[in-house]
Length: 172
Image (tube, rainbow, N blue to C red; front, top):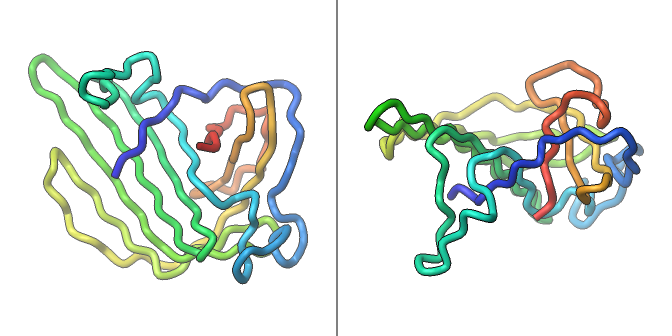
């Protein structure tokens, strides 16, 4: 399921770092190696903006060319990530959705994903679920003038710099 996303990729000069798990047990636990600051839903992207809510249908109106990201970390160690891209050319609209599910734990500011599955859906047609190898990445939780944010370096070896050109996920 795709969660409505906000356009929140603005970078701010001053940030207060609140979490990120900087000790061996991930900065606190709720169940095993779970950082309680990480638990919950996080969104990023510019696909659906709150002013375009349709109160008659209870839905958000999608922009023709858009993208969005939604990630959820449950206290039981379940991780779900959904991202999508919608493009329009003339009368043709293409929507690509990607879903990842896994188990996660936090150790020393690093998120480790195990038992990962991946599925892509193009215009409603699924590619089927594929098992993926285990992976890990660093993360950082902080607060700026927009509120609480999460940044991570999944798929990259770039350092975590909240003042740099990064995609900030916002807490739901």
